[in-house]
Image (cartoon, rainbow, N blue to C red):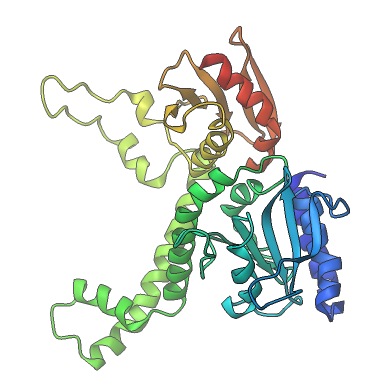
Length: 363
């Protein structure tokens, strides 16, 4: 079963069975072990890969157990602490993870209730587990941006350095997104004041705040609605609504005699968020073969090219995402392109060997 299909299958199982689960042990058997086996790809019955009830004495704490330790190449890579399905997860539930983190070789620790998974590392201080996770995954509400990051923790593509290097950005982007969501849902006083002072010249009194509260909520609703409509228009027409003005007007005049006009073909190129996400997935794979700063991209009307050293003669692959059936094209030594159909970005990881081989060919 493919990686994304495994996630979907486990989510369906949680929806069907969560109400029947009454204990932590049942949660582990029904949901956590399938996650470790089917999603992360580790053999839960092989003690060289997964150690349940892992014991690591810390100070005066003797015989205390962590629910699971995951090993790779004989080294402990991840620690997992489990709670009962439905139980809220907070830092108080992670006391054992905090204690064990700095006395093992693990760089990743996971706190889960079978549905929600919180991933921690040591960004704030070396060998000391952070209090805030760098990644959160809710299997019943999966953020598509978290899927490629989760894939880095799987047995087949596990790369701790790549994970850690991306963790800082993930951590703060996640926190900012949650804060934006909270403010959009219920704007706080500071958020309200920030916008009110930019559109209202008078003194911000309690009456003014009361007047602007519903206006801000309505503006947020209209703004997010416009974003959704813009994405829909982009999907239908292949261009951004904002770009349509450029297509209906004359090309811009050069600012100096030496500055050429932008070609019409370039104006029609729209780099999508999905193409950029695909680029970062490929980059995370092939950075094991070359320095990451050598990996770049160029967009065209036909495809999104990923290449080495910003050189069209050194192609790594091409992303054909501007069609109903998406493909990733990999070129052989004779520059003959083989296209592989994919239905999700996660499936790019199944082409890791071919991508690394293509990168080494042009390096």
